[in-house]
Image 1 (cartoon, helix red, strand yellow):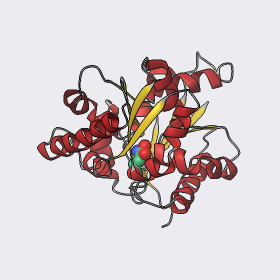
Image 2 (cartoon, protein in one colour; image 1 turned 30 degrees about the vertical axis):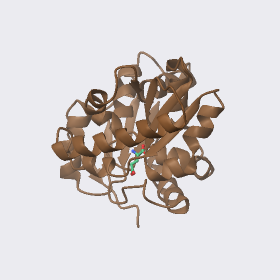
Image 3 (tube, helix red, strand yellow; image 1 turned 60 degrees about the vertical axis):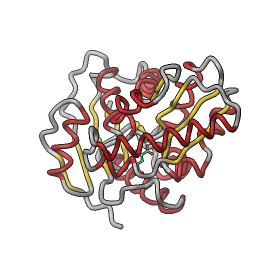
Image 4 (cartoon, helix red, strand yellow; image 1 turned 60 degrees about the horizontal axis):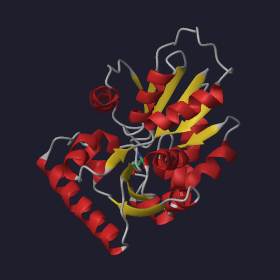
Length: 266
Ligand code: DGL
């Protein structure tokens, strides 16, 4: 079974990591559309065009199942992606909302995400369908900081402090008692430690990676050979492969040997 994993950049590696742990026998293809990132600051039509061309590329390379490891593309373009390719597609907004559903006792959750994801209200809608109230906060500076590798950086810490203070204030104004903070962008788990340090201990920080991997595992049950040996994971990027190798290895938690540069247009 060949599983394609797609994000605008490095963020989706957090999902790939969970998939490799959960389904080690699968073959993986990962595409980071780094030349056209950030998606989170773009319109629905542009995100849909970029995401559909990225999905088609992964299918042309042999992907038989696609994980859209990008909340922005999942929130804005899941239908367009499904229409563009002939293989099953799983997006991470639904799985993120599932994770919140399992975790929350107070049924009030906070969501940090890109501007485009927040404007779509995909999380608020998915949460409402699970009887959860959600406050969404756009955090547009975080993706560029992560892509720059500024994880333990004082600028990132200050940006996080400001975003989180504003989010907590929004929750207070809406009289919510949140117990769960959803990282609604796959780049944000790379800042998890910094975020956990900055929020009250009563707030549990969660992301969709493990839940997504578990859901893929269930969807593929019986469709792949558990005893198969996985081939090497193939990585593709639409911009600097050297940067992808260096930062990507750090974010994936294992070395990335080779990255192929692909041109998906503009
Ligand atoms: N990692 C993507 C997400 O989950 C977004 C990054 C971007 O803005 O391109 O939303």
